[in-house]
Image 1 (spheres, rainbow, N blue to C red):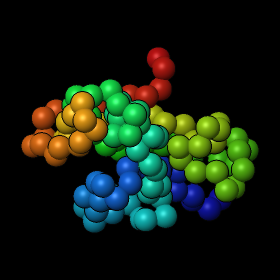
Image 2: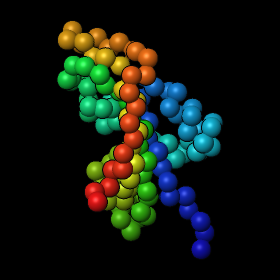
Image 3: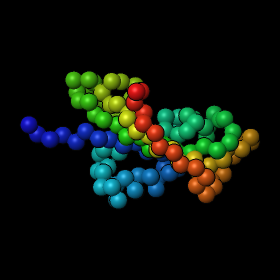
Length: 120
């Protein structure tokens, strides 16, 4: 049986390209297994830069297990609302402050947290 890589990662849009570089260059995850998602899907709180709430917020990087084509179509990818990719871990980097006027100010890393994403 041919080995098929099963671990995939996500990163937020170009606003935080450093995340992509770390996965690719330091952890050696190929680009084909790093899905680029937008702020509505891969930012905490979800959609914060565009829709609020105000306060500390930041990009996420999530880890997914590809459960295989028996759970979905070959064109599905991490972040799709399907059964094929199971999110099992999440990193949140709260590096921005969203102001009441909608401005997004980059700050020093104020907080970072990680958690499992699979219900126990």
